Length: 247
Image (cartoon, rainbow, N blue to C red; front, side, top):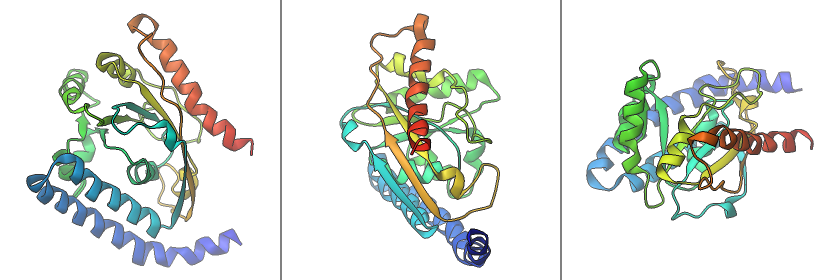
């Protein structure tokens, strides 16, 4: 039955959703540029980013369940840490997290029509992973934006998981949390890998779940025990995957 449904979905994917995704991305990217001159980055990000993500998620269609909203204080800035299994993670977080944040994005995305310049205008952070010094300079410059309830978002695995397992976490996000004296907000995203697998165009409707865990206080950590903070955060994120697998 699932195989038959997948075959039936293909015309919708190519003739309706695919063109809509392209058009909506260019439209909201252009609207972002316009709104950047008329209002503030937070409003622009919500109107353009959140609506863009929700519309594309709903048109897939993708149903999203969110657990743990009570763990977020909207006036508090966080370093947000999430696992990364699919491009659809972007839709889930941007569309359903409900707080203002800046993405840390690879430099290559700056060249994507609609997305690149729009993300730049609302203050998202592009880093050149091939140049360590430039990457550090970009993160240093970004720190001034992470105040007054605006957070920063990292996928610390660095790339999408190909086998759905949780990869090792890079330390950049955690060093920023210590530098800015901010709590870490761990998030587990589940199900997006079945909607759009990594390095694939095999899109298919499905359900996604986002678990927002309790924030982790970083005040007791320094560079000397940074590995402990990384390990703790990874265990918390992984606990959401284990919890779902056991059901």
